[in-house]
Length: 468
Image (tube, rainbow, N blue to C red; front, side, top):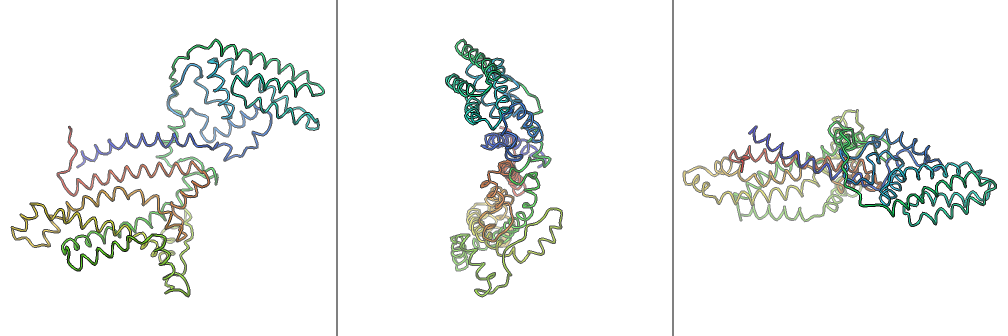
């Protein structure tokens, strides 16, 4: 068993690594700048590229964004191995596009420094001058140009705007230097050959390594909305979700296994037919509708029994006693647990019945009966373990649900769990929280599959991992 468990764990590691690559890639492609989302965009408003770059770099360092994305970069010789150090990202993208057209990074770097000088001089022009607005527009447009075909037109518009200034000489001199760099870029583009492939090794000090290490240590980044650690955002919702969904699934298994066995034992008899009809009827009820009926019947004054005084549950605050919180709201957990229970119970009980009937038709069961064993012994000692295989498989798939929660149930009963947190992160584009939850759910899916494999081997010792 121990050897089998070790081999299954080793097999799950590559799967987890591949999943982490996908989740991290999605996080990198998120259309939100974390620095701007967390610290605001005030530092990008001034015409001071060098100051912006330094300010952005300081804030990016706090978030770990000043490192390369991965262990290595597969690119061409048109790009340097330090492209990730260029801030802000808009400046990096502009320089990368120009470098792709010219395959000459030193010329692109020179052009960028001269453009920064134009932007700095524009910021020094007094706001009282009428020409300042047109100048800012022309220079801003020049800053956005990342295609050589549009560069000459943007430079001409900038010159026209500069010439309207009372003292244009310093800026015209800087613009002449910029135009010389632009001509050099055009010449480099016409002389450009085919860039050679290049692989740059960055080592272990990269964003992915830090993100993956943080996944195991609890350092999952910072929420873009609440500006708090992702760990704190998730921690306050995790235990309430585990309590709600864990209890529902546990009760479903405790009820469905003996119920499915009894239905199989009395196949096509009144108990079996009535139980099957009841389970199918309960399963057909929409969750939202059935939960609403329960609220009307048991938690609404003047319309039902009013055994439960409301359904809203206060959020649990990490650092306080969870058991005390659970005891305070124990009565309010009854309805959501029951609403979750009926759907899971129907699936598990009917699956147990079907599996049990299939096992009871096997030859070894007929042999056990022929030996004179009682039906109780046949069911519990010979048929039960083999009939549990489908339920173990289902447990491996529903295990992540215990963590991720149910959005419908939590919304209906105003329950502060993971489902509502996922929905909030998605609607507010809080990608660090969303992708952290996605990664944890994927890890739990793999863990659930591992648990199912171990249960297979425990239920039937013949199950093993053999070399092909």
